[in-house]
Length: 114
Length: 114
DNA sequence: TGATTACATAAGCAAATAATTATATACTTA
DNA sequence: TAAGTATATAATTATTTGCTTATGTAATCA
Image (cartoon, rainbow over all chains, first blue to last red; front, side, top):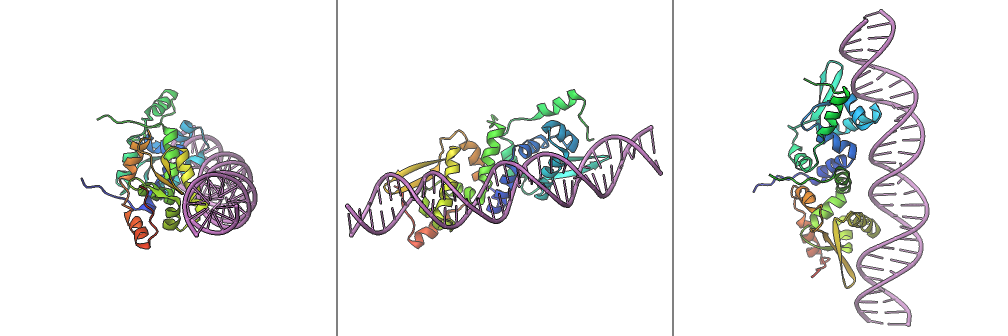
């Protein structure tokens, strides 16, 4: 079996980023749905700047991509990242977080990207 | 395919621990070799208390086990941990660190556990 | 038994992190 | 064009982290 490896230094950086419950949950959420900042604010009950700063860190390492759509900025996992295979093996072992999306829909606070 | 999942909170804790280059390298090293504290001091060129503190954190989450053998304490990945499958998928993607063990052997500072 | 070796733990400190408040910017809509 | 909404960034602060030094303990050895 061919096993791709990731540089130690980079792996530690990525794991440190994922080692925060908010960011880890974000990543699991946006692996299959794009979410905008105000949805995260609703989901995590955190201030908007705090959310933006978490997303900024994920963006700086190239783990997420953003897509502007009218007044919203939608974030999703960048599956074209060279680190996505590594990240995917982690996310695959985490419990599905889709009930958080359903709560937004029941709230009427869900914003559809496209 | 049956996919076991790990609680979000616990996953974040584990990833945070692994998100440190020293601890991550330690884990990769002791997945297949037991190492004692003084070997880590030699490998990482760090103070002994610093090494002990890293190991303590890994121990507190149950990721490593220790085995006392005369004056040395050998640490290795606890493969019976309920979190080992999760950790293994991460370690499997990291580059082999065995050259560090070979350096010890060339140095004459390698200590054999059993 | 006294000295040495291996390790753990405690205390202190500097750097990094994550949150908040305040403010700026860009887009939308009335 | 003015007001409102969504987001980003800067500044500040509290907390956490990782390291160092100092000290304690247990085992080995001369």
